[in-house]
Image (cartoon, rainbow, N blue to C red):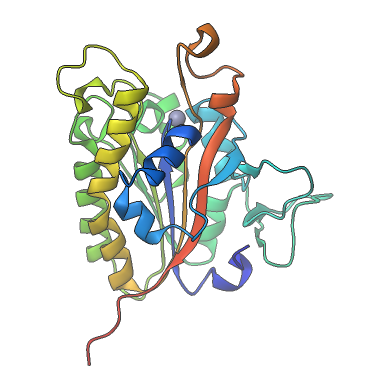
Amino acid sequence: MIDAARLIGSCDLLLLTLDTLRYDVAVESLREGRTPNLAAVLPAGGWEERHSPGSFTYSAHHAFFAGFLPTPVAPGFHPRLFAVRFPGSETTGPQTCVFDAPDIVRGLAGRGYHTLCIGGVGFFNLRTPLGAVLPGLFAESHWRPDLGVTDPDSTANQVALACARLGELPADRRVFLFLNVSAIHQPNRFYVPGATADSLATHAAAFAYVDSQLPPLFEALRRRGSALCVVCSDHGTTYGDDGYTGHRLAHPVVWTVPYAEFVLPATAETP
Ligand SMILES: [Zn+2]
């Protein structure tokens, strides 16, 4: 486990949620070489199999922001990277970064971080009171239609916006960047030419598209220094599995999510 208690305060933090990405698709895509850019930064073991604390975006992200990232699937107590202080927590260890705050976003702000939200799916769209709850935790939040699920170029647009803001913020100001990738969430049929319905194949194609757009984001972070990165899905989804379609339901492919945590090194200084 990464020592978040030591790192927070000295490096930027990225939480990248690959909204709706299924664990089985993530693993197969990595094995088949369809996600080379993530392969270049993920730990040697690749994706870790974890259970999400929620079966859809709103519940999962509320839990994430309270310090409950996806849980390792093996039985036992698993120390968490982040926690907000409450009595009796059995998963707060010496390497857990603990905040005296209602959530980790405001906890990080209290440690001097600029908190930046690049929205994606509807729960981040700032268009309704409900769509403003999660972005409202952040000092700065963005959403436009071209960052959302209906734009085939959403990841390129999200990454461009994130890179622009990272470049504008002072280099000595630590940043918590949260980016909710919307492209894998339905509709995703437009990532397979000619497809007329969403399917596991279009889901995988959307994920390959997302991977192709990520290098500028990692480079922008590395130019600012090293960054603690958490990359995971918030839930999976069903495409007719056992008769189910969609998520917000208790099926193993919904609860089981890919997860990775790693430290992205700073770009080497040129003498
Ligand atoms: Zn979601």
